[in-house]
Length: 192
Length: 192
DNA sequence: TCTCTAACTTACTTACTGGTAAGTATAGTG
DNA sequence: CACTATACTTACCAGTAAGTAAGTTAGAGA
Image (cartoon, rainbow over all chains, first blue to last red; front, top):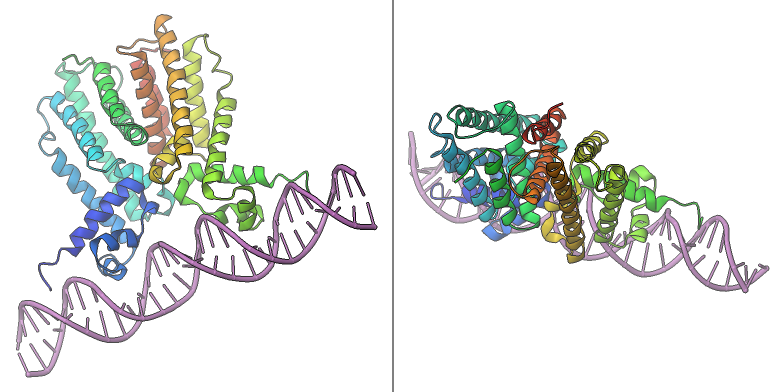
């Protein structure tokens, strides 16, 4: 075999899906191996223990996010399309069977995470906040958005809202997401 | 024994704590029975299966919420203290070791919930939205709050924000919660 | 006093958890 | 051709999950 084996990739794919569907404690090695037609031990070969797998999933998350946001994450342009890009990304993740975000999936099992993973998660969040803060800042200075208070506080509140909205959408339906996005737009004084 | 046995209550107490700390799949019967000094089977005596326990926890949640919000949930009064009451309740829940809310705890394991529990959860959420909608409506008409859009949309967005904020606070610290509350106030045009 | 019932415990079962050690097939390398 | 590394499988392990059947104990009521 040596080459042309994509088992590792498939494991990550499947685990990623499961992680964002059921959380860290909500899936087992069996849930991954069975549909892939491999044995448990195959997963252990690629990821000696579950935390190694989670580490890989956080990296995967970074990549998915970067891919899904690359077009609108070009700093400096108009803020509105960047915000809309964020909304669209969140919506598409929900639609393709990833109802909760990685931060949410990890939050629930936060106590049994290794320090390394906590740090990676922390970095990811700080990165997201920093980006959206810049978008908010630019948006306000270019008169695209209107809001009071610090740009960072506004950014944090919007990210919290999206996180909560995804949870709500899970329990109810995707209309909740769209509705909350609309309210964010309204709050920012955006009129189409 | 017959009387004066409060094992059932203690089980609910412990399970409630665990549920809002780790989620449905994050605790076992052992986690409940061991600290209580009883056996696994004692839990099964009171709650034949885990779903029966969850059902009891949802009821408990209703009661805790009702107790914790009774003072400010008297409809018709000024809106501001009602909103502040909601913030204080969310904060106190976080502080007393219940970092995530029931809706969030159930959302992650939503697929393996019984229809009865889904309905109970649904009812709870609709109830919360209805209440906050009224608060928002009153607040706007009495010139306490300023916002655009439907009162219900605003209410849903605030509840989503609080839900997300609790998750963030878990991973980071309680400052996130306070900060987001502040931003909600600012967005509503509240100045102290 | 006898009986009934509530509230358990004891002792188990079945199924699944993450994890490991040892073996195997395959492909590339010297 | 022998050797080595990769990518697994087979066959296990100890621990834990929820759940159950049968026995035990204490008090309440007739």
